[in-house]
Image 1 (cartoon, one colour):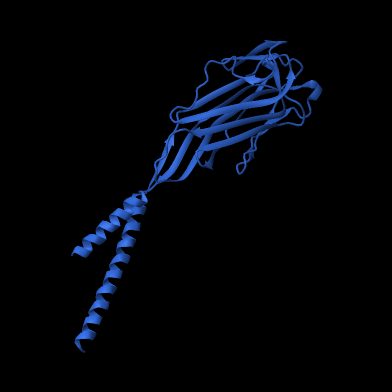
Image 2: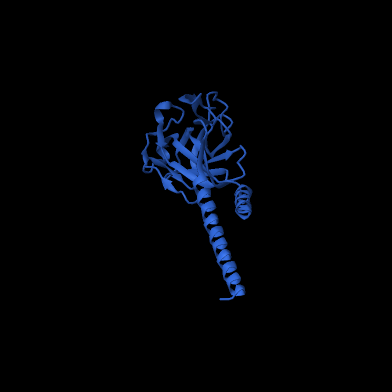
Length: 253
C-alpha cells in the first residue's frame, strides 16, 4: 500500500471514529436531558365557597362572609345560575340554611348551571412543557325540596357536563312540602365528582341539576383545590452550549 492510500485510510478511520464519538455524545446529551427533566406539581390551598339565592332573585354571596378562596398563584370564579322558583325561600346566612320568609327567594332546578373556572396566575419557567391545570372538587352540594304541585318522583341529582369529563351523582330523595321557606322542607344533595385536568393554565368545569320536574333549591356550596402540573426540562440553549463545549474540547485533544 503506497503512502497516499495509507493516508486516505487513516483519514477515513479518524473520520469514522469522530462521527461515532459525535453520535455517542449526542445520545449522552439526550439521556442527560431526560434525567434532568422533572415533574412539578403546584397546589393551591383549599377553597370553600358558597352562594345563596337571595331576595335579589339571583345567586350571590351577599349573605356570606366566610367563603375561602384558593391561596397561592391561583384564582377561582364560581357562577351559579338558575330560574326563580319563588320570591319566598330560606335564608343562607354564612352558609347555614335557616327558615326564611316571603322575600328571601328560592331558586329553581330548571336551567340550573354551576360554572367553575380555575386559573393559574403565576409565571411558568421557560422550560415548562405538558402544562395542565387540575380542578379538584371534593364536594359540590345544594339544598333542594319537591313542591307537592310538581312532586313527580321527588328526586334530584347533579350531572357534570364538562367536555370529556361527564358524570352524574346518585339521585337524592327529597321531602315533598308546600312551604319552601322552611329549613325542614330541604334535603342536601352532596357529591364528590373528583378531579378533572385540562391542558394549559386554566380549567373549567360545569354542572347542572337533573329532575323530572321543578325543584326549589338554595344553599349552593363547593370545596376543593387547584393544581398546576408541568414537566420542566433544560433550556435547549443550555444543552447546545454543553455539546459545543465538549466538541471543542475533543478537537483540542
